[in-house]
Image (cartoon, rainbow, N blue to C red):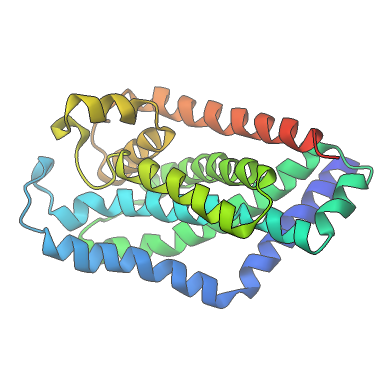
Length: 250
């Protein structure tokens, strides 16, 4: 119970910090809207499988993009905490490194989940109708994606010493993950070298499950239960890696 209270305290701090930054919430909705309305409308003539419009097809991918950007960039909280001394305080406190990572990962993951959930009502604007069953599948999928990607951000931030270095590395991580995930185009039409690269990208399986849940269609990469298992293993492995990295901090 003591560890659970510590995890809750860190979780509450991250969620409260996110909720107080209303400008951050608003700005995180503008980019998906631009992709759906402007980019989707401009390429609406591109044929996609299942008789879908291009705007409809890319909605799960844009949902994945929102989770990706919000989750990974939440790792910047580690750098801010280091700058203001809070990180030193929790590292010297009688709190295990795993507890610290879980608290921050769950808090930032909740923030990303809120951001993704705010995007769901926009699905009706682009012709995606989500029944309750689809939402019940989307929510746990978004949770796993968020925790795994938040851990990526925390892992990289724990190794960085400046905001500039973090932003540079994040750009090298986020954009390849997004563009090779199949968020904007079917991987079946991609060249072989790009498909091979996509197979080692965990976002590929996340976007595939989101698309399957949205359209109740068959997954295009692997069976859905295997993709969901990959997301679970990915999230658990990154939490363990973060715990190890934080344990080495003096």
